[in-house]
Amino acid sequence: MSKLYRFPGGVKLPGHKAISTSQPIRKAPIPDRLFVPLRQHIGSAAECIVEKGQRVLKGQMIGRVSDYVAAPVHAPSSGTVIDIQKFPAAHASSLPSDVIIIEPDGKDEWMQSEPIADITELDKSELRNMIRFAGIVGLGGAAFPTFIKLNPAGHQISKLILNGAECEPYISCDDMLMRERPHEVIDGAKIMRHALNAEQVIIAIEDNKPEAIAALNTLADEYDWLDVQGIPVIYPTGGERQLIKVLTGKDVPSQGLPLDLGMVVSNVATAAAIHHAIDHQQPLISRIVTVTGSGVRSPQNFEALIGTPMSDLIELAGGYTDDADRLVVGGPMMGITLKTDATPVVKASNCLLVQTPADHAGEAIIRPCIRCGECVKVCPVKLLPQQLYWYSQAKYHDDLQSHNLFDCIECGCCTVVCPSHIPLVQYFRFGKSEIWKKQQETLKADRARERSEAKTLRLERIKAEKKAQHAARAKKTAAGAGRKKEIEAAVARTKAKKAGDTGSAENATDNA
Ligand code: SF4
Ligand code: SF4
Image (cartoon, rainbow, N blue to C red; front, side, top):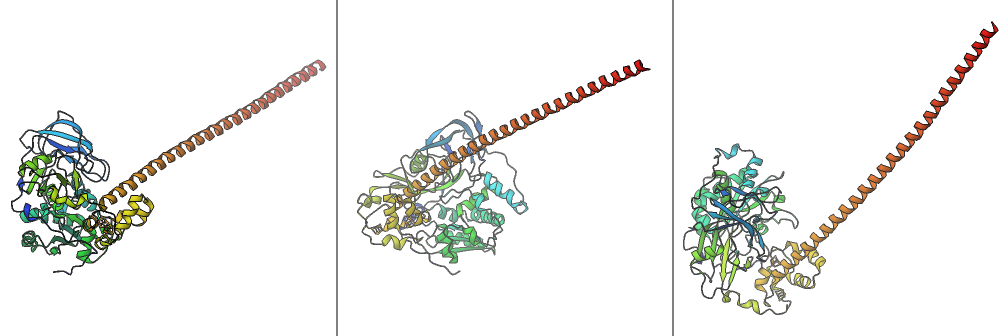
């Protein structure tokens, strides 16, 4: 057992995980309609490359990418594209985004693909490209395109950390994956290690998942580069920086990346998705989703196709209880409340949490801040939440930034301990979005100004060039006129001379 370290702050939370782990992962049937959003990841949306009425095969790319930070999307089953339209997305606003709607034909017919004999023979950039075009993104909830993380960019990678902490209450999809399919995680780890040239791989799992630790340990003995490490149960130990601190004692610098320390952190389910993409040429078209909470009758985990309506999964889990009143995607700490269950499962949908009034009883009684300092004690990134709260209320954006608002990982620890029930994390999310909006507007205005200045400069340059050309032409014309005069004068002189010579000759004859 390696030495472990402690990150600052954090909170102990009741897990509520056992309610969804008593049944094995169940494969959700193909739904009547699949709703595949073109943006399911951090970065630019994919561009639709299919038409209404077109037949598609399972695994066929239907949304391609050209930008670097982006991920393509694929048909989760064979069928016909019946529409491309706006649909509510799985984010807080439930604002519509572009979605490809497929009517499955029930055949579930795969695209043909060529198996790869030996991944170690593949060039590393070729391997990253395959992971990119399989649409793999971080499945822990962040949905950042994974191929970017697998580019060491000149760094020597000492540790690839596979994050199986799953520290947020209620969520158990990673736990069930590791218990039931540990070989998928380890096969993915092999590929990722090869892509990064990593010296060591650590699979870090909170100690409240003994079955997962045991399942991985039975396979891990075969590999001297692989360690399965149990870690203490404290929220948010699954945060990238917190996990690195716990395992190595090192701090990722405020504006830095784990790469700066020679480390890469990725989720265990992402490793399994990479195994499917490379070993079986199957792009990311499904994921394990925990459907849980006191508002659903039979909490459990489903393997669901991307694009499956959330309402279908709730139905499969026995439906809502009579007092269910809130649907959250993600966990209770970092999840977002949805306005409708018609929203489809996307790559980031790790959990559907259905709550009842008892789960959020304290929220209605928000009182003023009493400056107790509890929020400061639990902040894992050593921020001053009560101070940030004042600045957020006052919209003091400069002060928010100078007090490192953007280091906030939105873990919600401050919110959960606040005796005044102030929804601090909501203020911080709002503050960040306001600053981003302002920065975008400034950027847009700067670009417009730069474009206008460039246009003025271009017009002035053209004007100056024309003036110079005109002057050159005038000079040439003047020079031409002068030369003409010189020639005419020379001709006149020659003629005059000739005339003079003839006269002399005639005179000479006359004189003979
Ligand atoms: S925990 Fe709540 S009441 Fe206490 S200082 Fe922080 S914001 Fe104020
Ligand atoms: S939500 Fe932000 S400010 Fe609050 S405890 Fe977490 S990191 Fe600190």
